[in-house]
Amino acid sequence: MQSSVRSIDKIIFILLLYISGFSGFITDLFMGSNKTALYVLYDGLIFLLALTSLSYIRSGLASILLFIAACVILNFSYNDSSVISTLNGLREVIIFPCLIIFYNKIFAEGNEETAKEYIGILKKYASWFLIAQIPVAYLQFVQYGPSDYVGGTLGGGGSGVLTLSVICLVYFMSHFRKNLLGIVLLYFCLTPLMLNETKVSFILIPLMFVFIYFEFKLSSILWSIGGAIVFLFLFNTLYTHKDLDFGESSMSGIFSADFLDEYLMGDIYSSDDIPRFTKIIIAWKLISEQVNTLFFGLEYGVFKGGSVLGLSHFAQTYQWLLGGTRPFLFILLIQGGLAFTIGIFWLIAYANNYFRHTNKFAMFLLLIFTVMLFYNDAFRNQNFCAIYFLLVYYVNSPLYRNENLETS
Image (cartoon, rainbow, N blue to C red; front, side):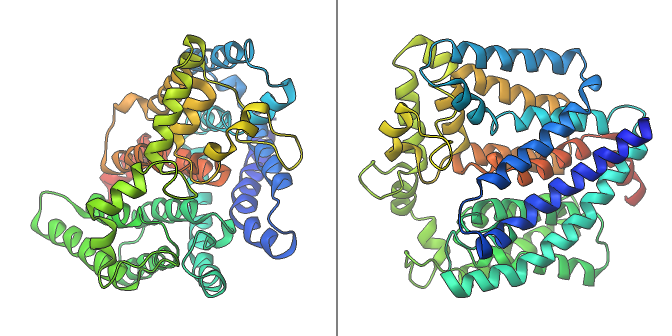
């Protein structure tokens, strides 16, 4: 029976990775931009994985789950949204705990062989995913130019998620590429990031090289600095944006004080898409108007609806604020307030084993989470969350520490 359940788990997990990682582009070609049915399917697969893993919930995780459940119930006790709208909105915030419940089982003590199998599944998926992005991103670039539509196999509008997925998977695969040719081919898979508009690549990719290669040895220092410089040169030369002209140097334009101030903290009238930090500030002001909303948020589901279910009254009133680029912290505060945000931070700490075994990769993944709090909502994407949390559990496991000892 146990082996049968494990086989079902693996089938569901593989379906989740490949369908959520490749169907977006196919849907754009044949079904248009409405992906509601696909998102429901992704969520359903994640819920199934959690359901098969409930017996592995221990007291530490149970306390966090009860805390989050209490936050949701208290929010629902006073908001005006319907049960259906609330449940629909909860889909995008409970994929966090559902994936952690599942990975808690995969990386449980005594399941080392199972953990190895899942890392093998991720390695195969990463190879196919990284290779596929190059021609698909190029075709999107030719059709739409350097824009958010260059989302690779994730589909149009997925440029930010594509950037983060590629960076995380390249870092992961660098752990297994030791010969020079393999390393060069792996880093060639970063080229789609030069075809879309994600400016955060200027920060994350050089940092990735630093985290991969930096040690207190001259050769490692030279490799990390050299890799960062080469990437910055290529990106500075090749980067374009359909709406922005930085002149001869894209890098100096992006990091200029005037551009950053306008890009991150401009007023609500400065562009059609309200700047990221401005949205967080407005969210804080909105939830601070009452004690209950400060701690437990306004309502779940404000970022859902419009295609199948109708928008709530709040969502209709504040659509000018809720649309466009959405930092993850903005989403957490609007929906669940301070308490739910603390619950998500608590889950991240739990997944990282409360930082008992820190290493460079674990620190880089934590940096990704921190950046995304203020940058975009990639953590609403099922494919990225499945990859990210598997990597978090992997780098905090004895399996990763033992592999490092064997290769050092």
